[in-house]
Image (cartoon, rainbow, N blue to C red; front, side, top):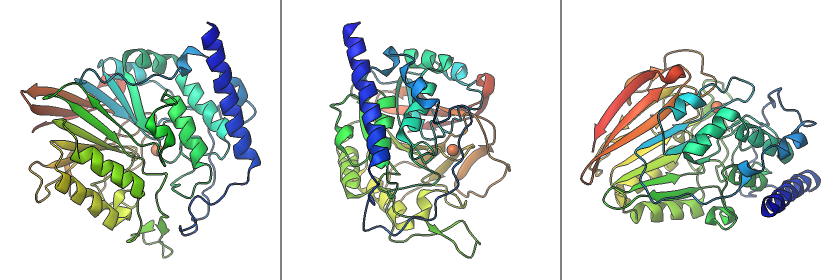
Amino acid sequence: MFHLRLSAFFFCMSVFALAASAQTNPPKPANSQQKPSKPAAPISRSPELTEREAPEAENLDLEAFKPRAIDTSLAPAVIAFGSCNKLDKPQGMWNDVAANNPNLWIWLGDIIYADTNNMRVLAGYYKKLKNEPEYKKLRAKAQIVGIYDDHDYGNNDSGGGYPWKKASKKCLLDFLDVPSNHPARKRDGAYTAYSFGKAPQRIKVIILDTRYNRDTLLPDLSKKSRYLPNLEGDMLGEAQWKWLENELRHSDANLNILCSSIQVLSDEHPYEKWGNFPNCRKRLLNLIVHTKPKNLMIISGDRHMAEVSKMDLQGLPYPLYDFTSSGMTHIRSGTTEANRLRVGDMIVKRNFGLIKVRWEAAKPIVTMEVRGLQNELLQDITVKY
Ligand SMILES: [Fe+2]
């Protein structure tokens, strides 16, 4: 009990220190090389947690905030993932997720919608979610890893220029119970990788940080499109590229899951996507081809809909899939969108994703399921690698 109180004390102190430093020190530009950011989008704040209420949200459940390392001894047979979760909307899908007995839950961003520069408010949102009774039940069942997108990292569509990114990264890693000695604590981003289970049925999950070092988006002033392609722009930063190359080249897993908060393959829509940085997207696809990890698939979020995209890459001995699931609590308007790479349907219903893995010796058979309210199966696509 004593150590619990002590760790809670240090946790609260660190959050207050973080919040205080974020509030008292004027933010420095994160990267002086970067072009100036676009004007800040209007901040939309969920009404259920105001700045005044946030400190009260910090002391709700001490046990829920105990750092622990991810147990990688067993390869998960069921991996669930999702994104875009507003706390002022019903959190009604956690029981449906848990009903599938996932061994692992992967957050792909917009875990909460904070849209704030106040780190105490951000931490308060994360803590509120962590104390949602249904989410706690899932936490008791499945290990949880993941990454932020924009609304939980900073503000809408924010990137490497977000001045509070260091503190925001800490809030995310605290939310995910990442121990203080984990290498991600010292990286220039919250990217992580985990290898689960033993060969030949090992599964590696590689989680990218597409915010911390992302260059500036180029708004289309003619308003014909939302963004113009930024041909020189980068998504990851050189340290993360080097880390990613190493993780791919030396992966001994027979199923590799590359996690990106925003879509990699689908690039005909006008919103956030790797396609806004076309050369950077090419660099990622080339890296996959050259490092040749066995049986790699991509998962992504952000879009408030679900779909599966497929691309055949010369030199890669299997088709590359990008399985998007987004919209735990809300969905987009409009039910059509061009995507020449789509297989199956675009699902415009609240959803989460499931990756079910069976093995034939060293070969994975992967079923990508889109599931909705009441655990309804909305689409399933099976790939035999
Ligand atoms: Fe979102």
